[in-house]
Length: 450
Image (cartoon, rainbow, N blue to C red; front, side, top):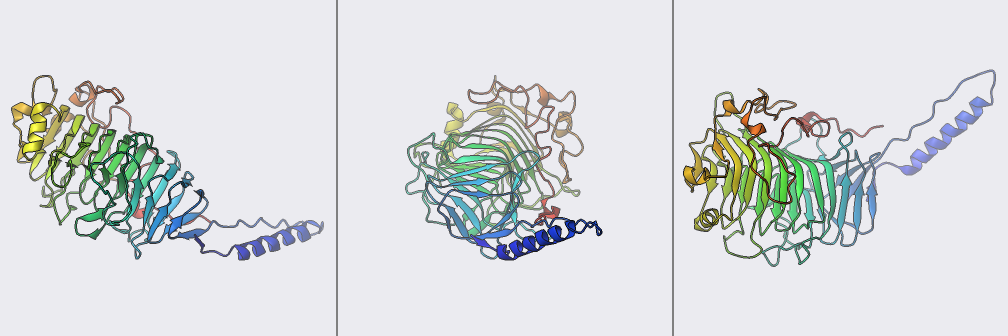
């Protein structure tokens, strides 16, 4: 950890100021009060390994240079309101290793921000690598190493492993493909256990997936994926946690040119094997929209709102999907995943498809999607009574359905472990993004406060 500002110089300034105060106060005739000198915070470059318990303070800022590792047995604590910048030239990323912890607990008023080190107006997706958290929970791949970095292992035999806590955290302009198809995402979770807490996290302008889970059992609530490049929620290698309340907004002009971009993408593993543990994640109360351009076009590399393939068994409940996806709304791909749907391993309950895709469902039939008791529906967007800003690239979109919308009461009964809801989508009447989320990080002022 290297200080960029000279502490010695600051101490000399403080000493001179104190001397001035003493001399002035002793002169009764002058009656001049010298104002106290405020020593500014410092910007610290962080490189290599963090090998002892460390606290990053909101009064300072931290510039990640290259791959930075929180080593096993070490806890990194980050105060509310702290800003951490990723260096562009060194393709910086922060890794919390298996057996280490990150305690990044912000507040709605003082979120913790991981962002680009570029100035306002010059920030771009992929300016830095992103945040990688690794744990000891089961994965279905051995050895399991971080994509892109290709050396640090994750996973184990402890489903309840605890890697710390993220709360009220924003991750902006991250996500780099270090090699073809080997990327670090805005937030990468590898073998992270259910003892870890993740809530109120926004990933914006990511250069790859916004959130990707590689195995593990960690649960999460209140996630925002905003204008990312590739997939929003990507699940692989046996991930089996619960994710509730998610808000996905896609930019129609931004898609992954190396593949295709989906709202959800899910595999059991890269080869679609029956390796255990199987990917069995459950998602509930998700709102997804691919925002339309004025001329109605979208990038041709977009594909489906939901793509389930390669023997995945994920399930989705009480969620709504809208937008002009070029291929389909729900796509169940391959014999293994189709068998999982037919057997009931994949569940779709309380799901509303209101896309303008050529096919609302693909791989399965509409009759299968609308099976008795599932409470699924295919709808027109206008019938859902969203606010006019719902699918606009505005400073503060409003995802709350209007009065009389079927989304407010059309939900199915959720499985155990979820917060009970009767509404479909991320919101009922309360906007949980207020205060801490930022839908214009390009112009945010992240200058170090003096």
